[in-house]
Image (cartoon, rainbow, N blue to C red; front, side):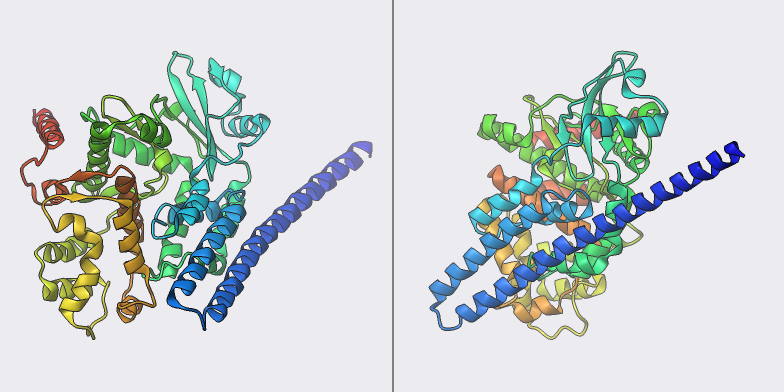
Length: 479
């Protein structure tokens, strides 16, 4: 009788505990939603106030009002999203790194989203490891540092030592972040409203969010990332200037990912220490990794976050974090390169036709082809001349033109579409442009791109070294 009563009591306690946890999760999700709704409402009413107040102002006064609006919006977004681990913070990060068209103070505010977030308590990280492997970190590793070396939107990284002496990086997912993310991703309308705050007028915001939702669902399972990183590491095995850390499969699971430890300079450390020659080399390495992956391998990292790189004094770069991997589907890259081919030849009519076929432009096309070409080609200026120097001024001006819904090209912008399969690529293009602009990189980008797209001869010394490596790999695989 007593045993039966105890069993009933235990069952009741478990049920009560489950109810409490479920109720807490529901309240947490409602709180997350309300924070974003309040942010969206504040930004909407502030924007309306700016428009009303600017009605009778001069153009210069309206510009000052709009600049202050952009700064206040960026500060508000950074304050709200900076403490919200998961999909909402990731959304802010994805947009913040391409915000080069904003005023400097607004860029500085959004840049805080790229920094490490507050880490979780050591006991929570250890609890995740126990749940995944059935043993605490001190049983799995010779040494485990409970203080993380980095903390981001989904998980944090600890330094550890394997039983065989290998030093490794162990990424541990925040407990409960999967529920938070799933709730965020399920609430698509909230994310649509959030992204609309950033005025990405040339993008189909719904397509952007839907693509993000699909990719982030994959990010929750570190086993998927482990397979992706292993695939990329094999593609670049023994590469002369690109390094991807190896995965340690026996210490990797759904919420724990262990890989080879890599020393190196962070982005900010590199910018502070590097001279012009080092910056030029690194810029070319970043460009080659992105475009070689896109055009040669049809699979690429969709998150050019500056925290995902480690820089070495010999000019090599280590690439980290492959949770947001994009693979081309059948015909996708061909449709894209068809547009680019005609654009690089300066053929406005053919560019419009290729853009219609790819789904970017409406058919029939109601605008003058030459006029529209000036707008469509502006982001591709680095590939329309023999040498080009990236600068923050160029990125800012080009983004302002591309995003200006009230400017000369407003009707064309409204008529354009961004097919979902190219949303992540657009993130890479602008993210890479922002990185190269911070490096003030100058180079023969058109000729380097031709190496990957057309099999053209190497345009630089790095191209020659890479071509030798590729030839050696082909020879080895054939023997």
